Amino acid sequence: MTQFVEANNAVFRYEHVGNAEGAGAPLLLVHELGGDMTSWDPALEAGLCANRPAMRFDWRGAGMSEKVRGHFDIDVMCADIAGVVKETGFGGGAPVDVVGIALGGGVVIGFAARYPEMVRRLVSTSSAIGGSPAAAAGLKERATGVERDGMRPYCEASHARSFADHLRTDADLYEWYRKKWIAQDPTSFAAHNRMLADMDEFPSLPKIKAKTLVLSGTHDPLRPPEMVKDIASKIPGADYEELETGHFMHVQTPDLCAKRIPMFLDQN
Image (cartoon, rainbow, N blue to C red; front, side):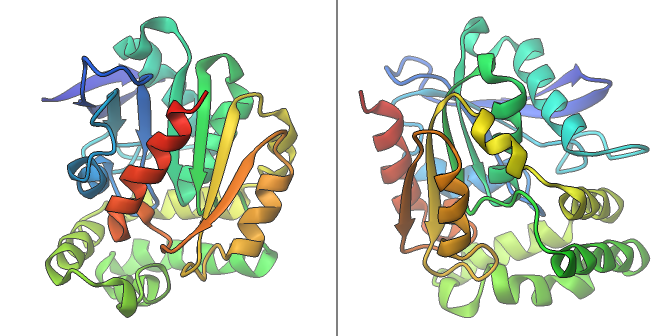
């Protein structure tokens, strides 16, 4: 059942999912830029959390969580995650497993570096941890545009790269995702874009203590494999793998997501 919790001076929508009686460690699911917690639906239906308790939530500004107002950056977002986990009692105070997609993949890297005592194992896919000045300028330009014009005019240009035609193998699924993207709050989406434009989580990489798996997608032009592999190389002891997927693994290849991630989380 969907619930709400107040943490770090904001209200968040969250939901317990998966198998509360499963043997796997508790898993926190962190969604992508332009998405919300329902983006995990396809992977959950494919069995991602069939053997473990899990929790998903809308980060600040996404879905039905409180919208972004005032100062917002990666430190705030990581403190939000820590607050949501603590206030809900997820994991009973023990470290939990964490998986994040795209910008969520960058956010969970920041979270694991700032709150190492809260993370048992970490999975980051298509990790967005900061970029070039040109990429930052594009993100800031998009932020200004969506504030002025709303989400709709920017959907196809964004998805042409992150959700290209050859990845739209299920027309109904893509239409669901497209409409959900358009329905996000433009002001908060702009804040998320500016946050990513200003992010530089490269100094966080050597601070990560959790056992980590970093995944890239062969069909991801936004975070191509060579870029993601470089990130993995800077995390102590991290495993790296390139998969036949795109930028949004949990939506575009949910069966692969549901197979590969639990395999890592459950290994000795």
